[in-house]
Structure formats: structure tokens, C-alpha cells
Amino acid sequence: MAAFPAESDFVERKTSAGQKGLQRAVSAFSNAEGGVVLVGVDDDGTILGRALTPGVEDAIHQAALTLHDPGRYRIHELDVEGNPVTVVTVARRSEGFSQMPDGQILVRRGARSVPLIGPELQRFVMERALRRFELSDSGVPASASSPELLEEVRSAYRWKGNDLESRLREHGLVVPDGAERLTVAGALALLTEPHANLGKAYVEILRYPNEGVDYDKRIEVTGPVHHQVVRATELVMDELGTDLVVSGVRRYELAKIPEVVIRESIANAVAHRRYEEYGRPVRIEVRPDEVVVISPGGLPEPVTVQNIREAQSARNLVVLRFLRRFRVAEDTGRGVDVMQDEMIAALLEQPGFEDLGHAVRVTLPIRGAISPQERAWVMEVERRGELAPRDRITLVHAARGEALTNARVRELLGADSLDARASLRRLRDAGFLQQVGERGGATYILSSSVTAPVAFRLSPSDLENFVVSLATEEPLTNSRVRAATGLDRIQALRLLEKLVRAGRLQRVGERRGTQYRLVHQGSGTRRESADRRPIR
Image (tube, rainbow, N blue to C red; front, top):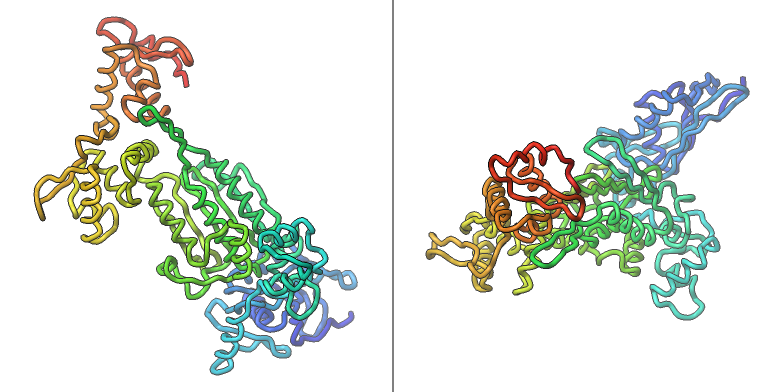
């Protein structure tokens, strides 16, 4: 049987898919010039054979997944004189470096994978830290660029004249060595389907109908990066829908999450992901109570979860600048600020950030401690005067009947004593709150000139009694209950049906003509009304 190529800087033989051996070879090739691992070949080159079974494939993936930042790898089966050999091709990392699970850094030298130590390790790390994968050669000719996208770019950058190629090179979209090929960033910006050359360089949207692990809808959002951000934002907003709330005589259609927050979370994921990880897309999970955006690759140094608002770093600066030109991303260092500030302004819970090492997860809560009805009421109140974003939370709790103290506001806002005092005084001076007492004993209650919806002020049982009392004047409708209480349509319907089941109200009519009348004791209508099907 013919011998296989000898082990070298680019070739490693393995008799089986053992974890440790595969890890060392993949990591070392990633940190050198790349190479191939031949699984099913003995040390002397004899072909033993190893078919690419699901078990072998899983073992290879598991070995790679336990590494820190391996290079791109592909797996295929090769037939050699009737014997199957599993081949793992590993690409050189252009950005950063790979590490073993214990943190060791290996490079390939001849037939060995050797660890780096001392000054050699220091030089290697410094050199790799200065390289950016987005500026590497994609291998795609610049002539493959879409004419339509080139015109979009020319317009966005306001380029004049006929020196388009030099402009593209100047802005990192074409390789700088004179070759007429696109950089990775250029491929992402100028190809209609960049994932055809760059792996899963797209956004994947999954919709989950409940808290389980099974999704019921999946969409791949492909195309150039700026189109991905725009289209993915539209799709997520459509999936979320809005809350329709009636407050007083006005109707408010409230976004469950502000669109700018959705857009910025997607833009950040697209701009800062590791494009070397070609096997994973940006993933968006739309769940009943949250939207989760997962971006391949950890946070770029020196950013951490703790300093994410203050620290600034862009893994793909060319891509980020490109998105900013099309006004689909905020300036460097402003994205997280906008997301947090807009969620505060909308009275929603703050975004959550997690660095998982292999990915960054951003969680956007759909529901907060403040209900849609309370958000609508704040918008109604603001017709009298604008509120600072954090003051809105303070005011809502006053509308709920709380007598607020400095300590309570510190707890609500997560602020210090000075900020809490400033919030209370602003609301007092604007006429929204009334101060009771002085100095350390001061409390603040909702001003008598500001009317909070009944539903904010009453306990559940008191609210039921209030609605029944309304029925003594005239038959109730869903819209009348909403106007009197501040509840939304579904909440009002549930309350009315609860009162029907309790025998306190009688439902008559159907659909838009449905009314709820007071049940008089001994009327004999309790069972009849309770058995009727709710009209929604």
C-alpha cells in the first residue's frame, strides 16, 4: 500500500480521532500557516482507513470546540485506493491566536506541535494582536463586486470622480498590495451574497413560541452587512408587534422594545463578531419574554462586561465605519449607551450583556416592572412637561400609591442619595409630586393635580368592586372599562369575565354589541351568564 505524505509543517498523521492529538494539531496549525490532519494514517504513512462517520465528525468538532479560538477548519473524506481517510484542513488565523484548553499556545514546527514560552511567546502575542482579519485578502476579485452596491457605497461616502478603486483601497475594502481583490470587509460590503465566500456571514432569526428549546420559525438574513442590519431589524420588530393601549381619550401603540435598541444590538453583533468563525452566524432568538442576540467571538480587548459602557474597541473597524456611513450603527463607543438609555426612557428593564468566551450574548427584556398601561400614562402626563428618563420610574411608583422617600428612590433607580434627591425635587418643582414633611422625614406623594388611572391605585378586589359600581349607572362595555380604569383591552376583558363567572355581572349580546349588566340577587341569571362563551 502506498505511503501517505510525510509529516511536516503542514501535515499531521493520526490513526484515530483522539481528542488530545487533534487539539494539539488544530491549535498549532491555526497559529502557524495552516495544515491538514489525516485521520486514518499511521505514523509510517500506512493507510489504516478511517471513514467520516457521525461519531468521527462529532469527535473532531468536540476537539475543536474545546480550544480557544481555533482557525477555520473543514472536514471531508478522501478515498485512497479504496480506503477512506478523514481529512481535517485547518486555516491559519489572521487575527488573534488559538490556545489549548489549559491556555498553552502551540505552533507547528516541522513534524511537531511545540509550545511557545518566554520572549518568543511575547513577540508572537504582540504581533497577532495587531492583525485584523477584516483587512485580510478574501480571495474574491474586486470585479465580483455588485455594481448596484458600488453605487450605494459611492453615494454613502459621497465620492466623486473616477478613482473608485483607490477610494475602496483607502477605506479597507480592497487589499492594499495592488492586487485587485476584496478584503474580508470589502466582501461583506460589496457582494450580494458574502456568505458564499465567507461561511455563515449572515444573521439567523429563530422564533420560539414558548420557553422550550424548539423554535417554530427560522429565517436567514443574507446580503451585504448593511442590508442585513436593516432587514433583520424589520423582521424582529414585525415578530414583536406592539402593545395597543388606551389612556384617557388617546390610543398609544407602544413598541415592546424600541426599534433603535433592536437595530443597535444587531449592528453591534454584525460589526464586532469574529468573521474567522465561519461556521456560526449572528443568531437572534425571539422569545415570549425577551430577544437574545448572540454574536460569535468574545468581547474585543480591553472591553469587559463591567466596563462595556466606558471602554471602546472595534474588532472590525472598517465594517463598523461602513455601517455608520449608512446610518445603521451609532458612533464608536455610543452603541451600548444608546441601548441602555433608550430602554430606561421606555421604562423597560436594562439590556443584559454576557461574554461567553466563544460568543457575546445580549438579552433584551420585552417586559419590565412597568406595564404598557403605565408607560402610556407617563406619555399622557408628559403632555404637561417633559420628564427625565429616570424620573419616569419614580413617578410611576408614586402613581401606584407609594409615599416615596430618598431611600426608596435610591432603590428604584440604583442611584446615590444626591441623584435620588434631585429626582424627587425635579418632580416636585414640576408639580408632579407633593412633598410632605421636611428634611430627613420628608416623603413625596402624587400631586392632587395629577390623576393616575384607577387600576394603578386599587387592589385587585377594590378594582373589581369599582367596576361593579360602574355597572349600577349603565351597562358596561370593554371600552368604557378601559377608559375608567386604564386597563388594556385584554385586561379589561379578563376582569369582566371574572366578574361574570363570580355572578356579579351578566353578559348580553355578542361581538361589538357585548354589554355587561349588574346582576341583581335572585335574578337567576348567574349560571346562564357564566356558561356563555367569552366574546373576544
